[in-house]
Amino acid sequence: MTKLTELLNIKHPIILAPMFLVTNIEMVKAALDNGISAAIPAMNFRNPNDITKAIQEIKQHIDKPFGINIIVNRSNTKLNAQIEACLVEPPAFIITSLGNPKTIIEKAHAKGIMVFCDVTDLKYAKKVEQVGADALIAVNSEAGGHAGCTPRNELIETLTKNCKIPVINAGGVSSSSDLRDVLKLGAAGTSIGTLFIASHECKVSDKYKNALINYGKNDIVLTRKLSGAPTTVINTDYVKSIGTKPNFLEYLINKNTGIKKFAKAILMRKGQNKLSNAAFKATYKTVWCASPAIENITELKSVKEIVEDLVGSL
Ligand SMILES: Cc1cc2nc3c(=O)[nH]c(=O)nc-3n(C[C@H](O)[C@H](O)[C@H](O)COP(=O)(O)O)c2cc1C
Picture 1 (tube, rainbow, N blue to C red):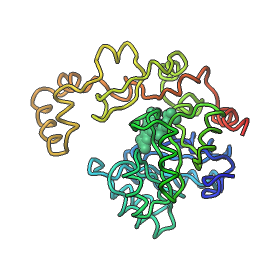
Picture 2 (picture 1 turned 60 degrees about the vertical axis):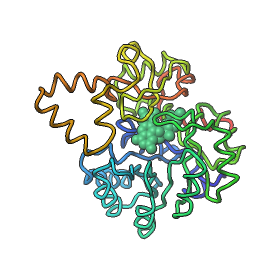
Picture 3 (picture 1 turned 180 degrees about the vertical axis):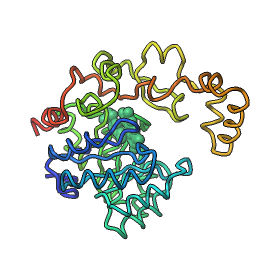
Picture 4 (picture 1 turned 180 degrees about the horizontal axis):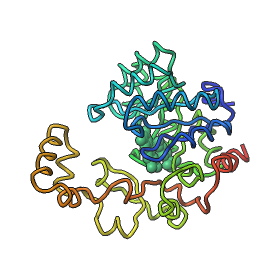
C-alpha cells in the first residue's frame, strides 16, 4: 500500500503516463484492467468533444480511476474547451503541465476531480501545493519528453521533505528494482511512459517500436526542434542529419503565438510545402521521443506483461 494506491484505490503504484500522440484509449483500458492507473493528454484529441467521449468509453469498459493531461499555459488555445470536456464527464484526476494550475484546480475540485501537477523543482512544487494540488508529479532529469534538470533521487528527497502532498516520481524507472528504490525514498508511486510505448496496445509505427529495442540509453539526446523546449529523443541517423537546434523559423514559431500568425503568413506566401519542409523536418512522426528507459526494452510486450515485470518483486 502506498499513498498513490490509497489515493486512487488501485492495486499497484503506477500511472501509465500521458504521452503526446502515443498514449491511446486501448493502453488506458489495459492499464486499468491490470491494476494500475493511466492518463491521456487532452491534446491527443483534435476535437475537445472527443475527450468527453473517450472518458465515457473508458468508464463503460471499467470502473477504475484514470486521468486527462492538460497543458495549462497560453500555448494551449483549446484550454477552456478541454477543461469543459472534463467537467461534463469527470475523470478521476487531471494532470497539469506548465502554467499556473490555480483556476483549473478550483474548477476540478468543484466537480470532485483531483489535480496532480507536473513539477521539476521545489519552488514550483510549493506554488502548486499552495493553490491546492492533490499530488506532485516529480519530473526528473531521466524522464522522457520534456525532462527536468534534477536527478531522480534528489528530486524525490527534496520534494518529500518539503511538501505535504504525495510525490509521484516520473523518470528513471524501467525495472522492478527501480520501482522499489523510488518507493523506498518516499515516492507515492511512479508515472511511466517509455516502457509502455513498446507495448502491443500502443499504435506508433513499427520503426519507432524497433528503435526502442535496438537503441540504448546512450543514444538518448535532447532536441529543441520539436516544441522549442528540450525534448528527449532517440539519436537516429535522421536526428543526426538535421541536428538538435531549432532553425530560425522554428525558433520564431515556437517563441510566441503572435509570431506564429506572422510565420503562418510567410508560409502562405512562400509556398507552404517547401518552407514547411525546411522549417519542420522534425515532427513527432519522424523523430522518436523516448527516455533512457529504452536500455531495458528488449522485446515488445503487452501492457499486462510490462506491469507484471514491474511489480513482480514488490
Ligand atoms: C513520447 C512521450 C510523450 C510525452 N508526452 C507528454 C505529454 O503530452 N504530457 C506530459 O505531461 N508528459 C509527457 N511525457 C512525459 C511522461 O508523461 C512521463 O513523465 C515520462 O514518460 C516518464 O519518464 P519515462 O518515459 O522514462 O517513463 C511524454 C513522454 C514521452 C516518452
